[in-house]
Image (cartoon, rainbow over all chains, first blue to last red; front, side, top):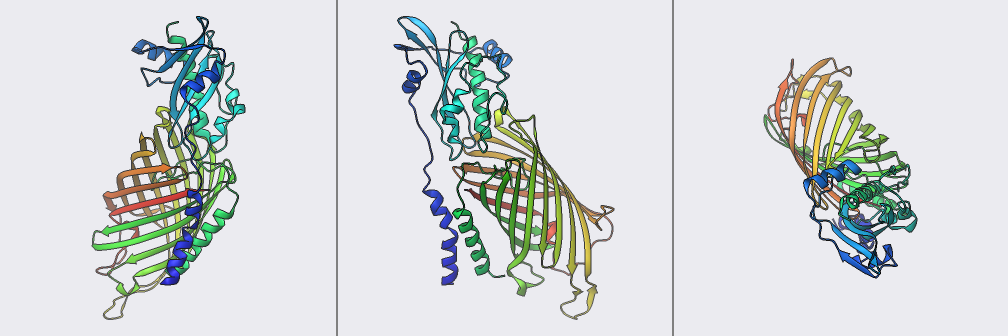
Length: 180
Length: 288
């Protein structure tokens, strides 16, 4: 019986080792993400937006994706009173948890940058790498946004890549329907 | 094979898995208890799963069989994974009370080839093959797996079509009181078809709730020609995952069972393990 207990404890050895891994979580505040996306801005003004049915339908038509949050978190980046673009903070599905990210959109509808604020999965943290995020820079609603096409997939994090790719496209559509 | 041997093999498997280089990868974790989705592990990833299936109840009385499967999965490529199972069972059969206890129930090998990825293609599609060898049984299972993700991945639909061939060595069936042979033993050949359907919805981060349906029909012989019985099973499933761990619990209950033609001879109080009225399956897994 004693020996059996020892074997049972041995069987739990991998559990103890795995528990030493630290799960990634919060990396950036909203303020930090705003500054990274529009370094030249001297002011970020919150835009209170409540999307109506027509705007939701327009976003779906432009991006092919459903905008579920009717009160998205949007800020206008300004410098000397001039608009530099929008910062939109959003959440998409990761494998187990939600991913919080921010997208900067220029006044002419191009992606200025993508920042990951929170990534809570045990795997697939490569979506935070500058190289992967840089694939979105300059993209417009006319871009393909195709995984393994113009956006490289990360093996083992396909759902996160899919969600972020769809999310960035959806936020470009959102930026297009928000009053200038 | 005793409990000590089982634990020893489990411990060894765990150590081997742990000692191999950890790679950034998501597990091909089980969203359902009885169904498979088409997701496979990326190349180099390893996952260890423990299955516990409790087959509960039969029409002719109390029956309980606990099936234990310890599995190690390995991603060979991003589209092809293999797995090995150590199978044991604990059977509490009133017809043979002296036989109760943990028994070695063979080994299985599994291969899944993903043809279409549910996140990159319009739906997921995969082929599955599983040969098994047990002391008194040889089995081969082939499955066609399909998966469709809806609502940005919040809702997962899955379907499996299964064909199974079993060759079983049976002992003579004797009356325990008189010792008289009731039915001669020999080699029994069985084929089986199954259709499984499942839906699971992400109700909150880390949590999926859903339902599974399973239709089973069994045939005498390996050619699907002489139908013996069929049954439907349905029930809820819950899945929780966090970090590298997941657990899935499914309960299936039988309805609409049918018998066709002459049935196997059963002693009073004896049971057929494959035609239980209820099933409870727990899967716990960890990826490396």
